[in-house]
Image 1 (cartoon, rainbow, N blue to C red):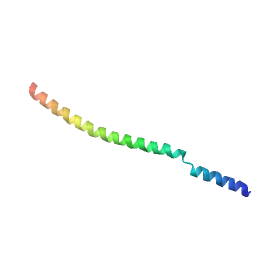
Image 2: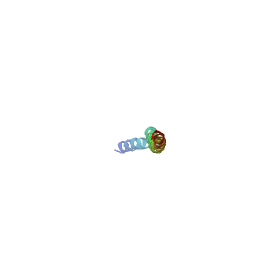
Image 3: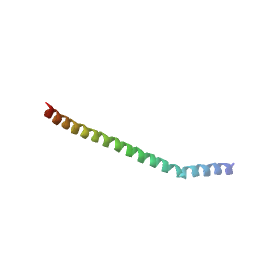
Image 4: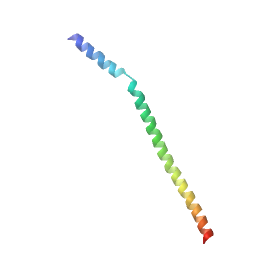
Length: 65
């Protein structure tokens, strides 16, 4: 009985100490951070482009009228 409990304990310790899954979690966090940064950057870029095109539209509209 003691041997069986010791084997179960050793298997749980091995599962707890394994580090193979940590790389996948780290990569997923990096990808999520990049996606969040890209989304925030695209919002700022879209706002800037929108105001630039509004300025161009206003300028062209004044020349046409």
